[in-house]
Image 1 (cartoon, rainbow over the protein chains, first blue to last red):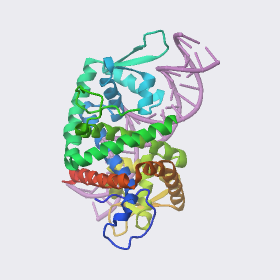
Image 2 (image 1 turned 90 degrees about the vertical axis):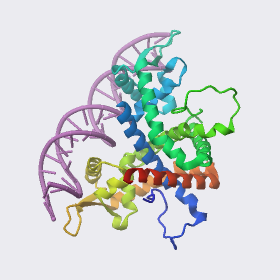
Image 3 (image 1 turned 30 degrees about the vertical axis):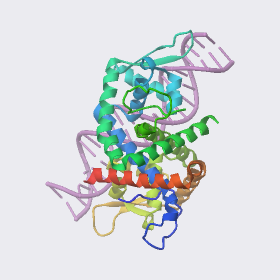
Image 4 (image 1 turned 45 degrees about the vertical axis):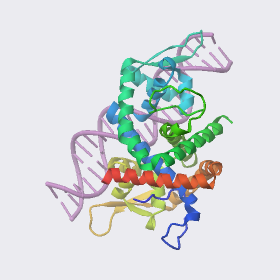
Length: 168
Length: 168
DNA sequence: CAAGATTGACTTATCAATCTTT
DNA sequence: AAAGATTGATAAGTCAATCTTG
């Protein structure tokens, strides 16, 4: 399949040859389609290997990488751009399944924090392994180290831009 | 913010300096986070400028780029990896709003096709302009032509890989 | 009273079951 | 009967309103 063209200006091409000078015009539609397809893969895989949505899974991943497997709810929400409501609903489900626990933060604050349970750690590991095996590894292998490195850099820059657009 | 590390192997770094040889290890978490943040932006923008979900919007975009603004339902589903059900539900909403019409395909087949209405075209254009102005342009400007070109290529390759994983 | 979080109503997405046309 | 699409039940995400603690 060739990428469809969401976002490109409607214009005719004189030839079918790839026009190097206009490649940047394809950047956006390609990027949008790539993100869509990859996200779709990630969602299916998280559902299949862990019976969790990818949105829930990202919360688990954040916790699994945190000190004491614990982070504040507002912090989780800010990092992932989730609404407080979304975090709350998601944690309710995850807590019911015994994957996380919620408790008040120490220090007499009015905030709460979530902690990954042992079960949560196991599930997160299982889903991560499937993700690496079925999605990440084949993809990065296909790209090769050089392109993977470029992608890492570009992604980091995009993340920075989007972060600044939020806070700045 | 720095990218969190979903999918990276848990290992300690000896130093805080950026280790060039290990940049590819960051490719995956960066990519996952970038996709998440960008998708989030796209969803909010489509909702804001068109009162449609990004999932619905992509259907509109496919139609807007098609001959006679028309495509078969199965074709739409295949391209976007939507289930038949999802396409049907989405078109029901879009049709109710007067943005698309559904009719049987010519040629005595049992298939159906969807066509963008004039209103649908207007809305799609409006959302696309907002998307370009608020998301695409700032982002690609920040990246510069060279990186945008690389991103386009890499995205195209990823799309191909994911397409082959499906059909092959 | 305001920061921080939850609740409830509504929309979107998914999965299984069903209907329709050839 | 099988391709192509719809329907209906459930789960996830969003927005506005509300509860709670310092």
